[in-house]
Length: 636
Image 1 (cartoon, rainbow, N blue to C red):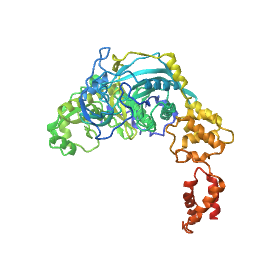
Image 2: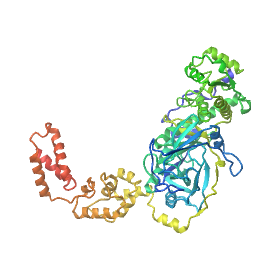
Image 3: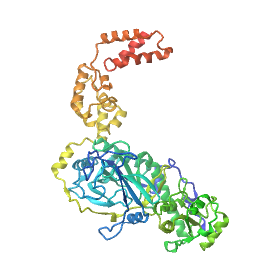
Image 4: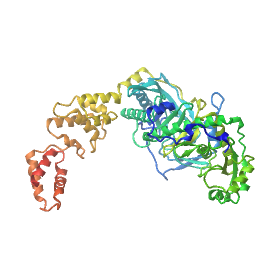
């Protein structure tokens, strides 16, 4: 190997540090910064801009119709195209939408103008913004945000800023909330294969809020913790949906010398630390590769980017996946990358090399998605024979040590692939390209699309601005519960145990707890017991947990001795009245007498078996410790 191509950056020569091995000081040395965009569906009966029901999902085979669409980019208000829109257009994707009559109407299919914004959704978004300490806007202006990946049939998402410039306390400081927006949710993806993408439209148009923070998190763990705080606060408001699929987050990461990279749609906050750690490693590796290319004199202008048709040289290959493609009349093209010696094999993420950056672009943009989708001449993996590689390299008119990438597929797809390889190689000379990346199950990230710019946003011409009166805002403010951090302080003051405190701080039943505190009598029911009741009552509740009168009546009965506190954990809708101890004990002893003498052979299991026989009738009517004492007495 030519000495010009010796790698000198120590970072590129050392094994990448695994997650958990770096301290806060190490992330500071990397210049790690992270911000969040937390999405949470609002709890409403209707969608945001139509009158279809929200929260109604359907399964495979339950659709009534299909619609086929192909997306095309449009000019922004400034007369320019957004880079993401152009990239999506290059994929030539055909989009199929699965429609169910119950969940969509002509609005979602862009065949009718929008209805007025749902007032409940708007009020609830204002409420969450207030709980995050944001300043509420005086007028709500609906804008359009281009989405050409097909996840929204109109090609754009309607969105509006609700609040700005908020703060939430975190550890010894504050995390700044840049803005909160209300927007339409997108379709659910069913499949994405080749040039075809399929979506379900049941989720489309459901109202959600997007909470955007500043890049105030300095470690991967902080990113997860702040995301959890925002999620808890939203849920504590009682204004959002909960459960699987109702929330997700986009995570923005950068390091010194890098740029903002968005990891899109992270489904679980538990994934955030490992994803952000690996993304930071990736960016630092790409910065190192940029430095190596600069030392070698490789510039964007020096990369020719010419592709060569080498189909005839591999026609009789024994490489199984390539031979299979050739049977289907695939075209094979190659592109040399002079100056990239030893760099394509460099690790950028755990078990992931720089070569995957090129493979991802081909997979997403050229739609060549069967893996492997490329070959590299300098890889230590048996692919083409040495004779075939020599012929390919000779056809590319380059030296033997120059890395050559080979791709295959239709002529149109391989032409796109060659263009994208050249584009990605030129981007490597400039550093880290602005990208939106997808979260992979192994904790690494993969290319999803070019990071959108300001050109994707433009005013909505169908809906007028909405003025927010002081009266409306004040009314919403008066109805809000206190935020979780104030709840924690209040619970500790009242003597609620720490486990209950941390859980109750994000419970929707908090306001009920506050309302019932005044009904507690000293020595009867403690705040700790009340919190436990509202959190852990596993039985059927009243039709709505917010039925204050029901709880007030039950607490009064407990404190007067009419019913036991344990009765509220009964699996019955209404707790049974307390039984006189003498009557209950008489029934208990008669029940014991009915049991055969050897009803349980193993002596150590007799107590448990006897409790199981009597508790269904005595639970909630006689104190449990009293029944247990009776059982121990008869068994002794």
